[in-house]
View 1 (spheres, rainbow, N blue to C red):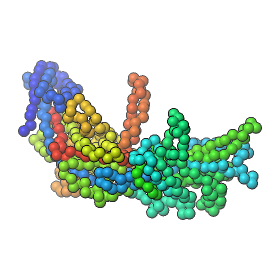
View 2: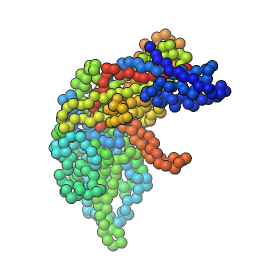
View 3: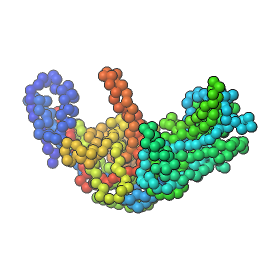
View 4: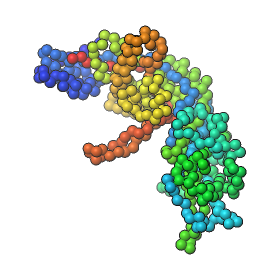
Length: 500
């Protein structure tokens, strides 16, 4: 039974519609706390604003996914065991390296580093910077670096199941090397690590002999980069020319060990040489960096069959990353609209209550911090088109550690997704008017996907206040290691209607 709340007070009849539009949304915001007096000061004796509140059960389920769009500004590298399922999670990543527009190297005649009169690099290395990680920093791990022969393409969506080796992107007989490492980086002194500017990194030397795709030999990869600049500087004019003519990128694969997953926030190729300036010899460094302006993708391997066991759980639904489990909600649109064809849906609220992890394992996966909710059939286009939430058909929710009420703690709350509810109702009505079989042909018409994501904000200056405000500019799949359970039983959607 729907409970109605109405009250009356005098006001100008000529202003009633304007006041309804302006004031009623403000009142609706508080309806979850106390709806006893909704409508006060809004109606006269002839016209009344009725507000109805009701809740409806949601059907929820867990969906196992084999891959997600692997585009990420963080590379993930390593293998760990998921304590919840006992399965291994393995990640590799591809990275391209860019160059500043019209970057100028030192004058060719100034280079002191030479062999038999030809320019060489004294040494070359790659550094994979690791601001954070999951697991044991002392776990002994091994990686394999492989040179790419074909660059990744901007317009191609690379999913987390993409294997560049199988797809032929790696260069045949190209540069390869392996590196054994720990994330504690024992090769770096404690005094260096204690410095304010130190960022932990995995060090990969590239000082072995290198042969390019044309069969030309160099003493190391850095010499290849230096030599080609002075021979063909046009290829170093911008990142596109550099990637497509000089360095397509590298693929970093897990090659051994278990216990740590490195979160590679940036990486760079460093070329070291000596040059002369004003009769003095200096040490120079050329750096090519993997940044947001060039492509980086992550490849993930999960035990999908084992994960599917969790989809059978009826007490909980699951959220697990990377590329593992999402939650799907089926909204009772018909029930929400029944007997309310003349009413306006003012708010629709869904709260997902998280179940605390009772495991005592020191390396238990953390919880996702940000969730995206949107229609199931919109997921693919949302990520492939690099969209951000519009608060109409897509919304974000951050984890609530604590709020004003106990009920709101340990939850993810989508405060008002009424526009999605209305959109789904309109889609069905219009579709059924044209085709009685419309719902059978569109089985996802009333389904929402709940997906862990990372949301990136940039500070912009308000034109009115002059203050700095955070502005959302990127939403991507969360490729880090997270897992949580959501209570399935009792999951509801709260609706507030109004009628004038």
